[in-house]
Length: 388
Image (cartoon, rainbow, N blue to C red; front, top):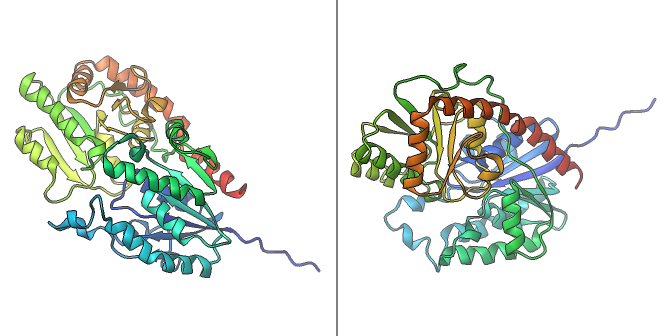
């Protein structure tokens, strides 16, 4: 009588070091949730992020390396992160031996970091028997020319010597890396995906009258362009006297944030509400109430917010930057604008006044969303894992 041989699942350590839960963090969450029955995942992360993953991975498979970003709340934060010293990077170096021990003990053969700090930790913790797959979610270090970005660019180039495979989330990110770095490892493009949210939020496809609800989900990070949006609303409300709109702002905002200061400066309290961070899937309740999604980013690879907007048939206005034009065609499934307040104000005014255009874009978006379903992303990722 022959006994059946048990096939062991591939062990993958996901490394995620970040100061907040946004698009890249959601991709890691989705990866664990939808592939856990086929891949044996482990998670290496910091204390600020760990609570977001408690529902998808067990304590024994999670390594919490501690709090990394508390110093940013201090008035002395510039002493910890400046052109000469980076407290986070130094802390990660000190924790690398602990991470390496965790990888060895768990017999992990595949290390999968997301975001640049995670890449640094992965390369300093790599064992002789492990491979590194790195997912590139942004290229901000390659398009800015200030000192900090130039320094980070050199580090990424150095880290890439230890990377075996790369996943890009858009053709744009791949092109930037190929232009900036020599000898890119074996790579593929895997577009982000979103869960099916059912039919669009309104059968009428955004044709109602009355105040129009605008939604922004980027938080306080400069790259997300909250200031651009508020300056555009200032133009609409205080200069053009267009007042039939309300703005809901989601995302992480520190206590003394620039967003609230700008709202006060432009006297927009009547029109703008900051709700802060709303955990998934509850954030979709705000999407379902939105008539227009605004993505005024200064740089993007492939924003999940746009894909979630597609999925609910929401008209979108987004900046013509990064990987956004790969998925959004101006006048067809959204409106593209330059990353400045005047152009954004013009595009918002156009959609506010044109119900027919809102309805057309809404219908097109819902159809377009079929390209970016979570099942496609997960199948592509599983195929990439198993062919290594």
